[in-house]
Image (cartoon, rainbow over all chains, first blue to last red; front, side):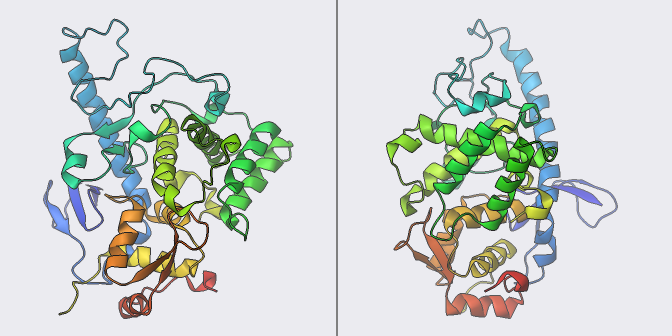
Amino acid sequence: LFTADFTGCAHLHITSCLGAAFDVGQVVDLFDGPGDDLALTIDDARAAKLAREENAARDAQKDATNAGKDSSTSSDPGGTSSDGDGGSSSSSGHDNGTNPSNSDPRNKTGDGGWSSTTTTGKAAEDRGVTGARGSASGRDFDPDAAGGPTQSLNAADATIDQEGVSQVGAHLHRFAGEGGLEAPEQGMLDRLTSIASGEMEPTIYDQNFYTHELDEAGRYAELGYGPESGADLASPAMYDVWNNVHSAALEDYGVSGAELFHPGLAP
Amino acid sequence: VSRPPLSGRQLTLLAIVAEGAGKWDARWIDITIDSRNGPSETTVLQELQALGNLGLVLRDDSRSGVGGRWSVTEEGRTSLNDAGAGPRASETT
């Protein structure tokens, strides 16, 4: 009936509407009572994804317009800098314009181009939060503390192999408590093991999970928290670090948290 | 003084914390709610801290766990019951 922009959990910003009792642009308080909104939240990840896609399309249109305006004044000969544009793109300040090293697990996809995909600026500042919202993940995080700038990579290009699966397993076990991996993580790891041994074909969820965990591990390493550092990634104090690298890794591959796990294994 | 009603997001998060039965850390709670319901305006840790300020959840840093391990207080359980929004029955322990 309508499409919506989830600007918060308690409000819905109607962006288009056909025959409903809402106006386009109206912000609707959905949560008059404690229980009447639960049915909505059950499936709002899908709706949020649709909304994000609409927003991304809108942003792309704005960027294209701005690029046209900026082209006459830009001093960046390669056109790759995202510094100082004051617009919706962000610069992480980490080696912009350079490719990741060959030892970076993120290179497993073979796509080494750097680009910034997060949005920053006034909206985040107004909320007093970390300063950026991922355009793909929708997550609030600090791209300047995420182990390097976000990239535009494609999980579908990844080949799942034994070495990579071992790295994924080792990375996940750095978070595991005495009870081992959470069941969905173990399930995904088992799938990757089967895929690497040729027993089954990968789905996009497998490739998303695989590339995400390798990317996340690489970002931890860039921040000095690689396996050799002896850092305890499961420390209670490590949430912000995890949030930054996890969110940036989602942005690298343009996926949301709802696209990481095979549907039958989702948390 | 009565507390303002919890938002749907808060109740959903509270139910997920209850589902974890004190074993889930903020990272796994975050991954779970992000997978099921999408992200929020702030970080999940900030959302948990807000629930903690309301006396509905408790953080335990005595064990390893990213962002601490979280459990629902009696008051939080009452809020869930009042809202008819308990944890997934099949996954509670």
